[in-house]
Figure (spheres, rainbow, N blue to C red):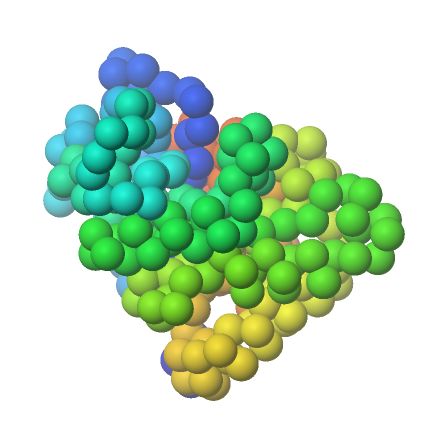
Length: 254
Ligand code: PGA
């Protein structure tokens, strides 16, 4: 079984203006300066308003561009929504679906997330499917049950290593500076791997990338990325600064 190519993806959330393109340029420049080729992929998911500009600016660099959400349908009377095909047209190569902030603030269910992931696939894009337990669920000893149920309901039928990436993000670790211990992360990633191999078989299920997300910083990246079945990171706050992103990516540099 081939080990998946790691991915470090930055989720800018609701941050960034057209003037933020300089940060993207600094990231691309920094990546060109470290010997990373073939060891790790890097992605920035800016707000939708910046997608096309960022995609144009990053053409020919090592940075790929992703979106943070999509509508499940291809077109229609859905004021304010964006179809996966529109995001692909703007230059996205992936779409984050089911981030816990959307599950919480927009009431997205795992069924909604599966439909959005299927929409990403329909548009020829990868879906970055997010799952994770709340603090209460962890304290109640329900982490593995919650994460595996979320994932099994959030992954559409056509999910394959080439079009699907999983992000395990404990809700309580997002933006808090807290992270689970390495053993706890390993346990959840192993359960996710088992679910994936059960669904897709050893070869395919073993090749799907499973990212860890939640307070990933340059200072903890090497330790987190060394955990078994951690194939990269989904980074929030620290992805807004090129220097921090580069510090995280450095976990994979020679
Ligand atoms: P954080 O966010 O890195 O700021 O904790 C992670 C995320 O929400 O993807």
